Image (cartoon, rainbow, N blue to C red):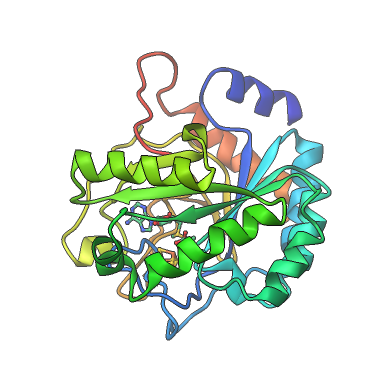
Length: 277
Ligand SMILES: C[S@@+](CC[C@H](N)C(=O)[O-])C[C@H]1O[C@@H](n2cnc3c(N)ncnc32)[C@H](O)[C@@H]1O
Ligand code: SF4
């Protein structure tokens, strides 16, 4: 299985990162959210901490080289720093976060594990507070800007993610100037369009996802294994199953076997442009 994975990665059929959706619960309710996350979401779809840790241990044995953890908002899970430490002891990790829940206590807990191989990727959509907050909620800009120096000051690597719907080119350039001033270099800034899934589809926002736009990367949620991290979305409270690969996520080898069969039938190579990451 390890050899098959390495071959598929070398052929550009899949990435060597395993994604985990830790929870669909969130303190925010962004207008375009893929997962319809909110403080009042009916089903939080939490992935158990032992389940995530075991999946990552299995992933390392199977040949995966890194892990992405997303949601919802992972810091809604009170034990998340402990889970993160156990996962980061196994493989390098990027954690996607809205950057709004960093109390001094949480920062201290994260600072104590800063020497492990992990980074935070924080969402920020504009250099203008009102334009950003229109999409992501009141005071979001201010809270993110307060968090970044406090995280960097504790030795934590910070990346930035910008989701584009109607930002101007000048606005995006000013946002880049802002992240550079904050100490985040260009190669730690991801920019991608709103994808027309989840709340974005309901709100008539974003671009349709083409079959080869996203590099397949095995993505686990409490509900199953999916083709890539833009796949396990929620619309009108129901999980989209069009890109489901397997219902069972453990043992990981079985889910990976199904995933490899699916990706072997998809186009790959130099002709395929992956426009989203
Ligand atoms: C679903 S969020 C989960 C992590 C965290 N709550 C956050 O907002 O960063 C992961 C990333 O997906 C982005 N995102 C949300 N909805 C999207 C959509 N419809 N299309 C593209 N990206 C989206 C968010 O802006 C964020 O950068
Ligand atoms: S994009 Fe992130 S912060 Fe916004 S509602 Fe969705 S999960 Fe929460």
